[in-house]
Structure formats: C-alpha cells, structure tokens
Amino acid sequence: MGEPGQYRLTELGHDLDIRTDLPCYRVWQAGELVDEPTDLAAVWRDDMVVFALGCSFSFEHGLLAAGIRLRHVEQGRNVAMFKTNIPTRRAGPFQGPMVVTMRPLKAADAIRAVQITSRVPEVHGAPVHIGDPALIGISDLSRPDYGDAVEVMPDELPVFWACGVTPQAAIAASKPAFCITHAPGCMLVTDRLNDQLGLG
Image 1 (tube, rainbow, N blue to C red):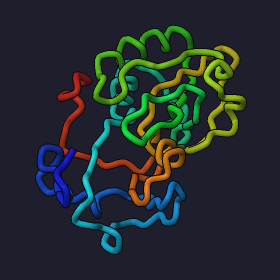
Image 2 (image 1 turned 30 degrees about the vertical axis):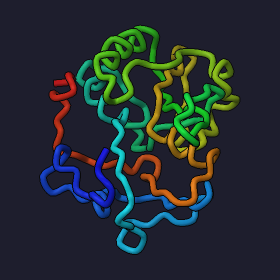
Image 3 (image 1 turned 90 degrees about the vertical axis):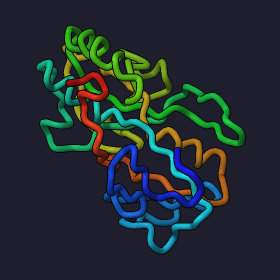
Image 4 (image 1 turned 180 degrees about the horizontal axis):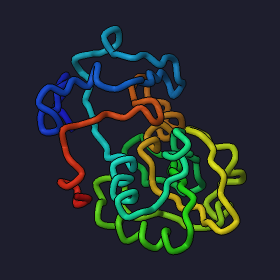
C-alpha cells in the first residue's frame, strides 16, 4: 500500500509508475465500470492510494517448472475467472463474493499444485476449492465471468485459486464513488523475482 498521491512503489520496482505500467485499467464510478484506459493521465488524483495485490500468474512459473501443464498457457488464453458464492470478509464498506481462477489438472498434478502454491501466500497460496464447481456457486465452467474458457477433460479436476479480481466484485457490490483497478489479466509486472517468493 502506498501513501496518498504516491504512484511510484519503489519496493516493487525502481522506476515503476502505477499510472502507466499496466496494459489496461478499469475506472469505476458508483460501482459501475465507466472506462478501460491504457494509462491514468486523465483520471489520476493526488488523494488516491495504491494497493498492490499478488497474482496467481506468479505461481504458474513454479507449476510449469514442476512439469504441470496449464491449458490456458498452452492455448495462449487468459485464465478463466469466476464469481463464487464464497463471501469475503467485510472491510469497512467493502464486501462481495470471492472471485477464483480455474486451472484443470489431473489428480496427481492437483496434489502437487497444492504443495507448490501453499508455499506462496503472497500470490494467493493454495487452492480454495478442488472439484465440483457447483459447491462454490459456479454453474457453467464454459462461461467464465472474466478471462477465457478452457475445457476440463474427463480425467481432470477443476482447481480453483483466490483471484486478484475479487476487489472488482467488491467494488461492484459496494459502489464506492470512484476507484481504479487493473483490467482482468492485465497485470503489473514488478522487479520482484519468483525466487523471492519461494518459487526459484
């Protein structure tokens, strides 16, 4: 978290500028998405505070290094993301459903993925659910709320991790007057290396 008006987070990158360094942003007013600019020059305000959250894309390096195949990576797609029926804990006026990413894995790979990702809580940690998507309120895996659908094969399990798009669901539910987020899948790349997360 930064200070009001601070757009450089030097602990994440020596020349990082949060106003320009993401591929796409989302601008929200009263809980409604009103714009998706590629920089924040027109909307940045000196009273804004930046929050940087970890992303599950960071642990994918560890999964791939362990020989775990990731279908969305192989197909050049964004990961599938779904709103769930899992409520988040209220923080002031903010609340809403947890959003999850889904990666289809064979059972042995799912076990190994739990072992790998549980070591990196800064980037969402272990899965929050494995198996029947209906148990967490997802009715159709072919229709993600964000990102791209990928097929789950008969010998695979859908594996679900917490997702950094969760704040956007909270914004839609809580309707703050104004805020900015990243667009789903359009992440901030920092100078921190995977081995600093325990994925080296």
